[in-house]
Image 1: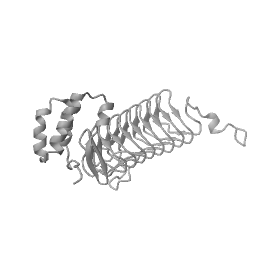
Image 2: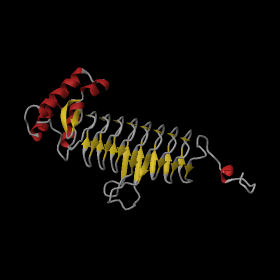
Image 3: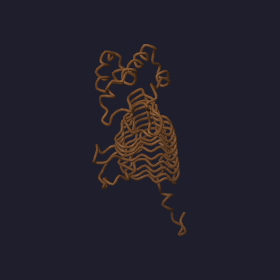
Image 4: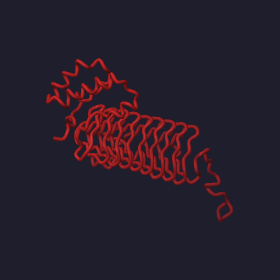
Length: 275
């Protein structure tokens, strides 16, 4: 009740199940079924949250943002904020997040810019640990793990099942292939082909991500094919063009084709071993 004896705004508010009365949810936000929003969180206009999402306390979600079902977003995360890129002038841009992701404490994810495709995209089943940053116009695939304080700047592409160690950093316009491992505290200045492990500052190619292959259930024949492909590219002194052409003989294997294609599509050149 107010001091005058009448009902307060909170008394009159219709609070949806799971929405803490101390949260602020804009009237235009669209929330699915069984959504939980914790105290002091802010869900802004043009935000869509799918079914079974859990948003902890002190989270800010700004639109236009579309988030799929079954996501968990922990405290102090900022999702869908305007990018600080100087080229951004307030135009409408988007953030799309898939299903069943875990976004831990203090993560920052920015929407896209009109200078690219006006969108930032994160796939499904990803784990972004504390204080991870995903910059504007990044496209992340599925099943990606980024450990604490790892970050990707604007316009970065990351393939499925990529794994980032803590404090790893990828500047703008780089590409990180699928099934890769980026060592902790690494600075990635070139494109990372599929299945590679890189580490260091600046990051250098260490070898294949064999542990990742085992976890994905790759059989010995596929691993042997990738080892042979790796040798052609990294151990025989070939130019990149010659190595890619030589890989055609092994390209009947899907994984080798993926490795080959990630090299062909590189725009900045691939990471090489340290001299």
